[in-house]
Image 1 (cartoon, helix red, strand yellow):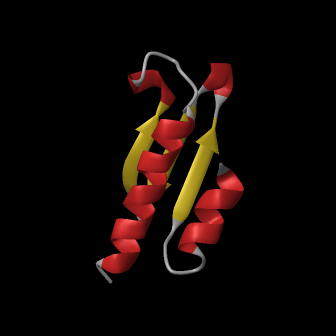
Image 2 (cartoon, rainbow, N blue to C red):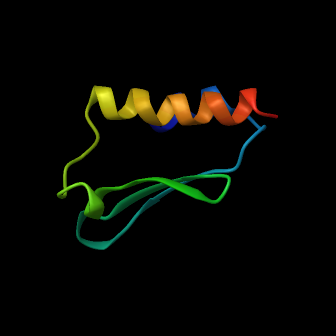
Length: 64
């Protein structure tokens, strides 16, 4: 997932993936939170969720 996001966004966007204590996982793109494991019933992102996050990255690049 991490490699896909950075490959998609390259150096055009600020992508932050923050692992934390007790399985916390948050993903930010240009300061906008696009994923927070604690807000999604503690589930790791499945393939469909990763595709949605990649779409956010693509849309941000397209809007530039």
